[in-house]
Amino acid sequence: MAFTAKSEAATPFSVEPPNDLFEMELMGAHRFYVAVPVCADVELKRRILGAIKSYFHGGSVDHLIKRYGDKWTLPEATEDQRFVVQTLKSIRRRVVQVLNSIAKGRPRPDHAGLLAAEVALMRLETSFRSAMILIAQAHAFEATAIVRMILEQVAWAYAVHDVADRAEVQRTSPTGAISRLKGLMPFAGPLYGALSGGAHIDPALTGRYFDATPDGTVTIRTQMSEESYSTLGHLMAVLSLFERVVQITLGAYIDRARERRFLDRFATLSETLDAALGKLKQMHIQLVELPDRLFETAP
Image (cartoon, rainbow, N blue to C red; front, side, top):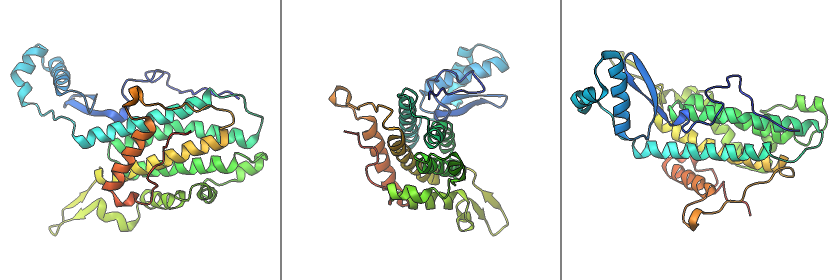
């Protein structure tokens, strides 16, 4: 079996972009906005905004920047924003590495469960990317729902990979498959419970996104920054399960690249991911049940 990722829209995403959507922020005038990397230099943002205003209002870009540029509010990316972007980029790199190893793997036998598992795992690239975009936008509930779906698909792939009967593969429930995954990695159970509570928007959680003042003013939060940090940690945990299940189901047919420290100084991707998860665990008690090291380099 050989797999080729195919998108209905061949452009502009047929080539891996230098920056993904989860790294971007919108900026511009009321008539037109563009996406710019959130960690881009302020001067670059100022010139882009000047070009937009020049197009709609006339005059040269340099003149507009010289006259109005110091009045435009263009803040530097905060330390937290940089941390989130770098962590998401590390997750993206890991997902791509794993999927590339599958795509370049050796021929597999004709087996119903193995084929179904591989297709489900390959398809998760889009799901991971969607979750990362939502986390970057601080849409915690929506991101949690997708992370939960990824976990269910990982569990399902693990449950059916050794099932030869096609009908039995189709009868296997993704939600029911979580129990078998808990036998492989016990933290999968509490993780699924946490994701289910967030994805279903438990009425007990309404205080996180809804507030009413005595005068009758109602405020609804659509962006939830603090909760998104927990969702980011949960996504990392699901990534580790994804990688583990790929190794168990397809390990005999793929080669995992060995990691080495560049110049013996810079951290490996596994070390970078573990460090980021450790930082998130220190900040958010909801992640305390996750193991300390989920991405240790394979021997």
